[in-house]
Amino acid sequence: MQVQDVDLRLLRIFVTIVECGGLSAAESRLNIGRSTISTHLSDLEIRLGLTLCKRGRSGFELTDAGRITYQASLELLQQCETFASTVAGSKHHLSGRVSIAIIDTLVSDPRCGVAQAIAVLKDKSNNLQFDIHVCEAREVETSVANGRALVGIGVSRHHIRGLDYEPLHLETNYLYCGQGHPLFGCDAKDIHTLLAQAEVISSNYMRDKEIRNDGLNYQHSASAYHDEGIAHLILSGKFIGYLPEHYASYWVEKGLFQAIRPEKYHYQIPVVLITSKTNATSPLAQATIKTIKACHSG
Image (cartoon, rainbow, N blue to C red; front, top):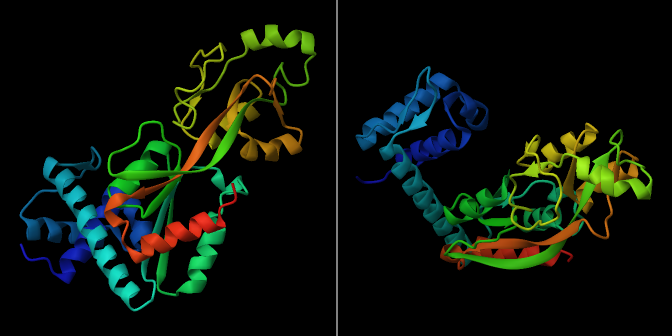
């Protein structure tokens, strides 16, 4: 089929629907009503001659054709953005969407520099749209790999082919307990016994998965995918868990968190800048990467 402007608009709507997990959830992102979104989706299905998804009481679910179309749409839209930014670059003007995928809580790390990078890029051009997607570590990589994000900032243990990883800084994580927990303010002689009894939060977040061998009591009675979830559990006073030092410092300074034997229970993990080899020549990608590096303070 010959791709026209209307097709690109419909594909963008379709991608948003998939990313939001359904038509209703996409309303606020698209700023249009559910019935209009449904009409656009039907128009795209007619245009392609495919059924892209199942929608009804059972929820939203992509068909096999829908999954293929979604991936192809991401690639096509990325190519369109690369074309636009390359042409704009030839005129020495930055233009396009600066999409950054990033792991949660880095906003509290003064070394991160993303906010400063956004300010610098915004000052360089008024033709930029900024999209910050906060997500789980593995999703940062896949977002860059499939073109949803121009760059990513996260952690990685098993690199994905086609991506480049450049270390930015080391993040230190400590083991914390909250006010009300038996370990909080306990006598040094009681720590060993209380640690053996303490329930430790199991993190499904790849920030620390596979790195710890601390001999603690992982009963899997509490788990979280993100640091904010871990913080809620620690604040309950019933569990202990690992958090980045820069994030936990907010509660430490308020006297609500306490590091447990920091000389022993800690680990470091590299935070990396993740980029795609396929858009390495894009002027917008180059400018974004250069600016993030310049604003980062490791």
